[in-house]
Image (cartoon, rainbow, N blue to C red):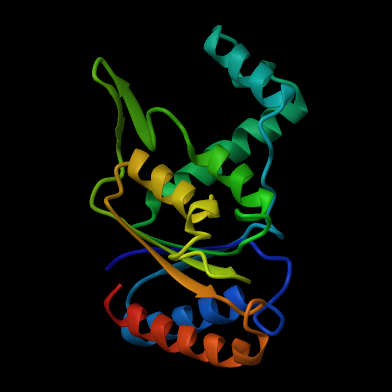
Length: 211
């Protein structure tokens, strides 16, 4: 039995979003093919995702200097606690599915804020004399990624900074298996948009059987 953490970063639902529609198809097929696996969903547009700010830095600094948690301000407590909750939730997962659109050559900013909360030394990676080492070996990740143009290959591939970044972070955590399911070309080829979507849904359903 494996726990799947399903993370979405889109303000729209599956009726208005290509990435969310394909992600839903994957999730439905995963439930059908892995009925015993717990699934945890995290909608980054509805969840509280604190940014690294002065409260977070000051809270961390106080704790490192020997202050107790009770000595933190209310905002420091709230944000530092949430960072810990999100990291612990991520560590508890065995499989990860990220669902995002491409906006301006990357994913929505809330995804970067989320990644910042889970890059935690001692939990997702550790520092050694030979450099950082990931602590989440043996896990796997998938990125469902909707792009208006073609970015999986060809001349625009070098302009995609979203999925390569997620792959780098997962590798940093020690996660060796990372795949991207591109849903791409809908804006470039609007007459084919629905067929692109349906093909991606079939691909997602197939991946869900063995993921």
